[in-house]
Length: 153
Image (cartoon, rainbow, N blue to C red; front, side, top):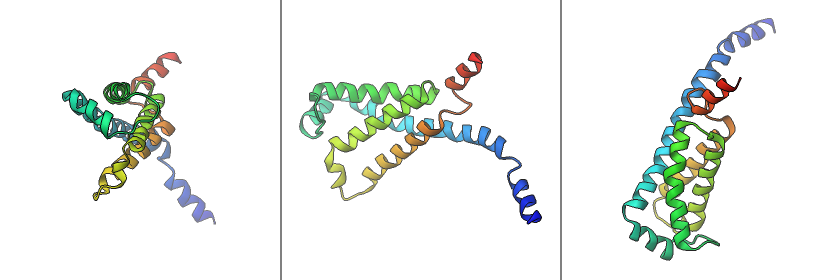
């Protein structure tokens, strides 16, 4: 029993530093990756606004709000929220808001489930999971959130 306890203690020797530094690097990588995915989608929307409006009127089934407002909200969310996420300011609420944008994309475009290539819907599921990781763990040390928290202490 003593040997097991000793080996276990050795295996946890660097846990605190790994959690702090490796977790922060991982959170930064997640913020950049997911942020870039959404930002690209926003750029596509604003690059051809008439096509975007047409898609929101004819293909996307956004509930409750008019298609034009949904297009503005979708493009705005996909351009502003990723910047906040990558910089790491208001990370948890921003990741939660992007999770909602992602969920709305899946809900409002049922054709995603009917495509022969499951990668389209799977990408949305992956992004959702990564965003929930950021909601759960925050931005890490490499963020404006951490800098502001440090200044406030």
